Image 1 (cartoon, rainbow, N blue to C red):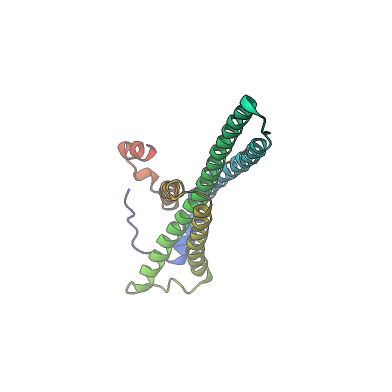
Image 2: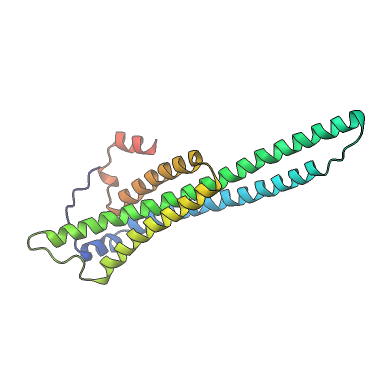
Length: 204
């Protein structure tokens, strides 16, 4: 679907939220999905981290015995240590995915707010148009745009400190694309203009 609106004033922006539950549902729904997924992954990361510490402690506690007993003890310690390393990598990956999801939601919300800011700016520049930034609501939307970008950068920074970029960045890009598309469809009520093929493609 194509957005056919070229400019909006703040009253028209407010009407988007007052006349339909779609915009609020888009924001709340994507926030709920991102928060639930991030919380679940954070819990998983904590559980994996605890397992890694237990495994490392068990590996270190295997005593050294003489002869064949010592070999068996060393082998058991190596297996436990290897399991602890694997659990640690999975814990870091889960934490990185959670950060990527949070960054994706923040980035998508910033994108949605930036669309509204641009439409307000176009109204301001339009011949005979109203000043789109003469009221507080416009600046609130601008604050959401800037705050979303700042939160996105912070979430990415924390994620990249905990996990590999190959885990965090794809999750961030993928989730931001989906969240931004859903928010845009509901914010501007573009669902009815989707064709059957377009809806199927979007769902895929």
